[in-house]
Image (tube, rainbow, N blue to C red; front, side):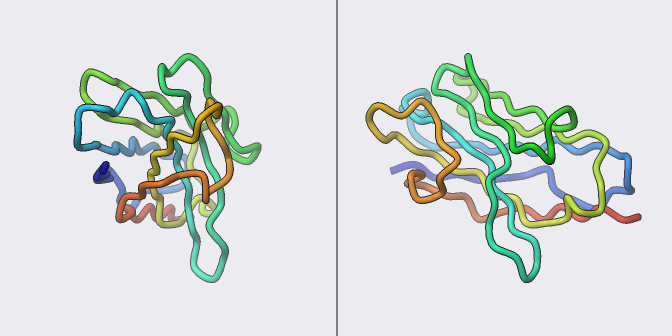
Length: 126
């Protein structure tokens, strides 16, 4: 079992920055690839970013490339999402997720993540 707790959300003006953190319980954090997803009101959940178990490779959805960065610190059992140049369309609840499907380095597919956090609200005002 892995428990995930997100933090760092809030209200920010367009062009501003936020850093989301996701702290994981347990001693096997490094055995999970990690992802960030978001869900805006009235919209489906969408993939934002993913990172491999070791942190040596990442993937970002096209709409956030050049603005967001995903990273992890396995010693601290934490994954981060640095968000710069925020836009109003980034407003959503952001969720972190952990997965460990065999043979999968990371994935954009939500149902290949076994554990999810409770979410943190990010609101970007124009």
